[in-house]
Image (cartoon, rainbow, N blue to C red):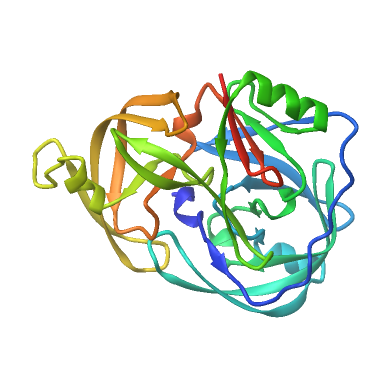
Length: 291
């Protein structure tokens, strides 16, 4: 359903730089709503157009519905070519919109992508990690809040949580995706951190490494067309333990994992973080998990 529209993962030519906000004097907290396992937050486009957008840490670039870009008189910038998690090519029209605000973060002349599927799915847009390069933030899945951290509140998060190195796929400063090392029952991979999906996913090469026979009756097999029309074959099996490699106590057990031919080792969606708080400090290259 909605999840089919998420997880674009772009590669880009040179784009205008994004504006940065000043460090916060104190933390700013805003609520989110969870729908189909996705994190929806409020935002503002232009002077007064309210948005309900998905906070998608696997999105790469901010993307808005074409109808909204037309409403605020967006200016065309060019074409970006990217790839979905499963490898399909996407050619995305880029636009400059007057401004885009999320909580205390405001960007004038913001660069966004346009994707017809968002209008088709009734979605306003996707907010990626791009605007958070200098702004640490926490998604608290227990409290249902997103916190824009100050220096002092970030220090408290670090002291109370489990810290893991944050790995960044930073495409010349124009698109950003985050990864961390996870253990899939002893098999370590660099997993994309993707709040644009509920699922835990892994490349099909992990089937053999984990001793999973895809023809076994305990494995669910399904084939379908993706939102781009490509065929995808999936195998769903239970993995005894999935854990953050640097903090193995941060784990889930009896985890359903979807195996398919994705372009990464693995993907960690929102279901893994239920009941936990997840902090991204991109400038410090740290991921902080806490109960």
